[in-house]
Image (cartoon, rainbow, N blue to C red; front, side, top):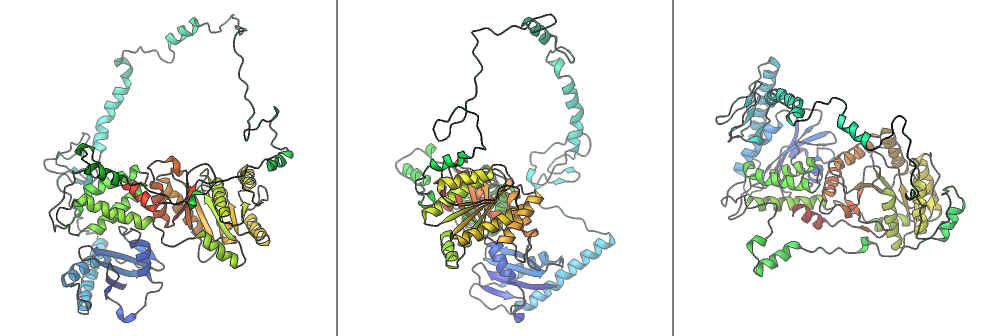
Length: 617
């Protein structure tokens, strides 16, 4: 049974609802959740949205700026919802008037449309049960549309046998898939014969397993054989270079074996602490120079037409006549170029495709003004979508939250999680340095009890930053270590506890269970996912599985998921900044820190406008 069908404008004005008399009958405000989590985050191309016990489906009328949403129980599989939304959209658009706010006369029309949709769904169900399924008509794709029997188009040949199927010049490759069994079967024998005869064609002798020429060369070069004596090295030959011991901090070290178990080593390092100086880049405002402004100035000064910048949307995408409605066929070339461009910027393919579908959904049916290009319209829509995605939905001010926790008499706890080798410990130290510059007392918690050398690495950072560290060695339960560290920080009046955890792959069940235990037991204020800016498609898999594991393994009613993202190695990617977009899109968490160097000061904020400009240039 359909719970509700709601019609409202993109501005949020509710025009009509099928359950007005019931008031707030729906539990948990699923419509609000749909707007926050799906429509505002450019996920409108998804087929449905689930919230608590409800499933929501929607349709748009972009020309009129209307949204149609159907809500029903998730346990029910209503087959007629899509058909009903399409019919309601068609009928309501005919009576819609922007000056009108009362549509009570649409009630009877809706009931009739619902009965018809239910009847069609029931008839389809009976046909399927009886085995008399009506033929499924292929989507309109123009000439050259692919079918299961081969290729059909304007004069195209069908290829179902062993021969190679031939494409007609009018065929549309993007409308379907070409079955290549015939091509493969027809080429197998040819490929084998080519491989077998490759050596003879090139004139190479059939030498078998041994090469006689190589054996002759070996004998001429004086290789040792039976009865031959091994030549002694001459006195003039240089001796083999001996590897020298490593020198730390540009200071000479005694020429002796490296002994990492020397108890005096820690004392010597404490006397030789290097004082770190410099202002963190987090507190500096980044100035973005606009390349387009410079190019416009050159154009005004009389630059040659050849020197003008050609964007990724070239002039091949012509404008259509004014007041013409956009259709998917008009948008496809521009969206294809857009998707390819995003993927070259290291955006995950899945995310790029969903974004393009969302832009197409938001533009379909809109009218273009005179002398307006489709490419510029798509680019503007994508720029607005990227800004909405990358802009944080909620404010996370760590310094403000630290002072709030201090007033409550407890330390502010941040847990750093992520996969192996992304730089969690190093960037944890950068965050600690930034907090120290704001007169915040920090304590480190060495909860990576799995990787050899992890505790020593964090101890070195603590010594250089001159801050305390809580450690219990290796092979300890990291959840218990973190709990004791928080208790120690409360006794010592430390403001912040930065918890370092072991790197783990998203598919490692034991380590993911240990991480979930640490988070559930200590309930940190902030869970930061540390990820590489170099990652591409794997960013989707990492973040989605981390969140999924934390949700599945949680022992509390409301599971703690990833709250923010720290991107590392941002200085090594040039203009391939797509990992930031992929991570934010898949998790909904904002990028709070960006690591851009090897010193403690190399930590900065993410400039959203700069990222969007880089993605679209």
